[in-house]
Image (tube, rainbow, N blue to C red; front, side, top):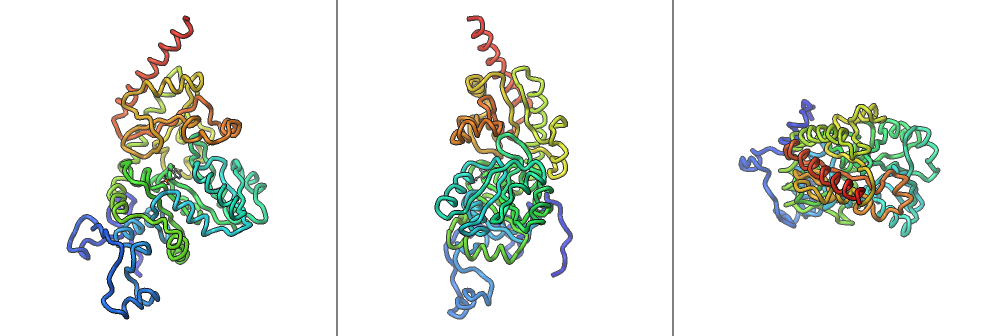
Length: 406
Ligand SMILES: *Cc1c(COP(=O)(O)O)cnc(C)c1O
């Protein structure tokens, strides 16, 4: 095949994997809301099943709408193939089931998504697939944690909710040396800001529920790999037989959301940068955590693997749980909710929400204190968001002075 000129991501999200002239000129990707596909003849059915002829069979094995999403995502992450799932967790579980067998060991970054942590517990309990969560600040630190039975390194960066980074170049170096596969959960950065396959990772996955869809109305997941044959193998084994596929309608919504990913990420980022500056000047804020902050000790790592900081900021409020809860209760525009990547700005209190199941000492050692809040900055006007925060901080200050006067 002739090598196509590499398009910019801004163009890829709109055009890749679809030719309207093959679909009656329909500019929008058609929604093939069907469970099965008919064959012209018995012979064609036989050939499709044996793989002699490419084509549709049954939507759990592939669907034309879903395929457009998969091709677009593979191109966006510079991968060889992609698979779409009914949730981010279906993508996580599929790749881990694919990569491991009983007795194997998975090395993980210390902060991972709560349900991924839950899945690792299930794999251990039922199949003796063990794991360790380790801080991965240096190559030596990673190397020390590798066991003879380690088969893969599974990381998230930035880590939720502390925004701590894992150095992807260091991980890939160590993994190559030891013949380990590398899986990166790239949900927080989106394919617009970070491309782990370019650095040498083998798989990158997304909770497409977040930035990829961007409109808070779909639960979905995506897995991209650098080996086409392996991705097709996963499609016809774990994905097909565990069955965590996406519905054509949700794929259609994701295709629509994805078109504005670059535009949205730029606005998420510029809003977050303005809010970071505001928070740094706010006297009731102790610490602000954002990857693209010159004062962040990991700023060099950030610049080395991310294009920009994205929409997530964490910060600590002076005081503890009571003050943190008082602050978020005083917000009017900013909504109290978990999730991220939506048009609406969301705030949550990790200690009592997303990370409430983590034992307290472990939670504190991860830096998730009672005064930590995570802000998923949306697409509203930055000034309105800052005004909302400022009003809430004033109310918090007032109640603190009243309390100390008593
Ligand atoms: C939300 C999330 C997931 C899980 O995705 P679902 O779509 O909710 O199944 C996995 N990893 C990260 C980092 C997430 O934020």
